Length: 402
Image 1: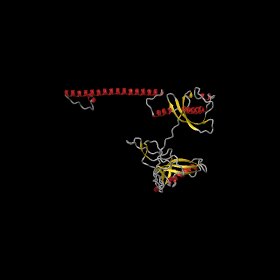
Image 2: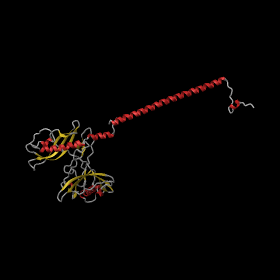
Image 3: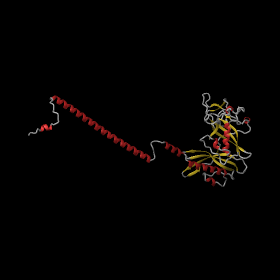
Image 4: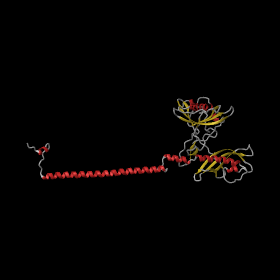
């Protein structure tokens, strides 16, 4: 039996069709172009891979370099950028509280020792300053109660200019009048120690001639808000009552223990709002706020009392007035806008000189302390007094209705 190996090898294959030579050449050309295109794509892909690898290597090298630079900057204590923490640390470092305390202490001691020094006791001043100052044969002054009035610092010379106020009287007369005097002392503070650079120089004290304008425009009389303020102050200062019952919910004000006064009497009340007699029995809607300046006579003994003033924030709630705060500072009037015709002045209220505006009305129990003809500097700081610091008790003809 004869086996046809050619048939076996071609089993399952479709028989080749017979084509002419031209067709075979065309197919070969297409195959060659496809192969060339594939080789070109493979070459481009390889080139892209090479550049991608190079870029990755460059990025890694740059990151390593940045890390090394950052590490060096951290080690040597410098930074390319200033953070908020750095600024806060620098500001705190600028204030040498220890050096300032040393300068203040030496200046206080030095001024007292210098004022009371006499001939033969020069060694007492050697502790503070160099040189041999001329001293009197006997002490001329008795100095007490030294206090630092002001202090300035010069960075370049590391010198504190300390102004010390001290009570001074004649040493030879124990009954002589005591005068508050001011002395400036330059004090140098270094790591080695602290020392005065010169003897004390007497200077003028700070001026107290300025007047302060407050923003309370209306006098209050026979109004529930004044009653609430009185009951609150009485509970806080005398222990007569519970303080919490007069406070706005959420507010905490502790009574003074032990109570410093026997009783408290209200002598004057000013408010930021016009609380007319018509609204005396009807408080403002819940949540409305009124600022008060309350003057009180605080009884210390059976016959003597001292005046005190309290700036209070009152809030209406449930038909009554409650204390929301004891203000750290009183109410000041808002700054008036500047105008082309008057760049430094603006309308303001009048300044009462006896505790009540001149236009006080005893019928309504209110005082509109406003006179539009007055002028006051257009500044945000208080400049002219509208309400006196202390209102005399029993001398105001307009206070009889309270």
